[in-house]
Image (cartoon, rainbow, N blue to C red; front, side, top):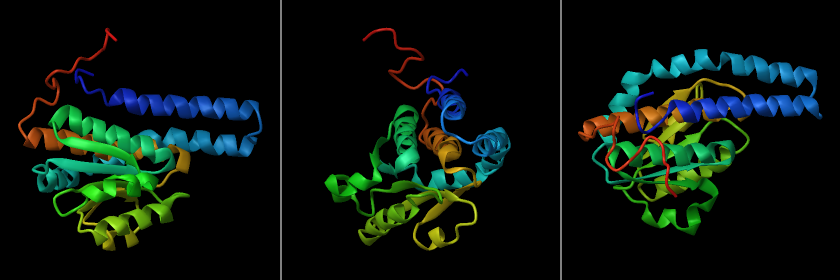
Length: 213
């Protein structure tokens, strides 16, 4: 991977950690049935990733709508909170847009004060155990006039009525959703960077590896 803002590394780390978790779980209390289910779902991830990559033109279109904004907020909960952080980091790195990744449960401790029609939010909201809480956060943002892009699970039509744009990801186990939900955010950062005329492979002031503290 020639790009300084490494994307494959993040996705690969998630897959490796999921495999390691499966191994540890089977050494302890995880049933054989559950272990096989996780292994099967994990083996399907490459195919599901290809389905997301096929949405390339849609993500590019959304990037055209949002590339002129100077600030963007990313929110997520539970497994997808780190995905919000990664999405914000990638946008900062390769498009030089100020972006913050925040735990959605912390919205009222600061970020909600910034929301208006000029401050978009990207919400990572798959159909999981914290879905309803994420919907509450989205409703709070819309009540303040903030534009919203949602990364949601395929088949969730309700979300379309609550946000401005939706990028769908295929359904998988909750613990594996970050592997899929992060890819649209990485692609969005890429296209916004290109539209802003940035060198997305070699961003200014960044290094592929950091050798000093």
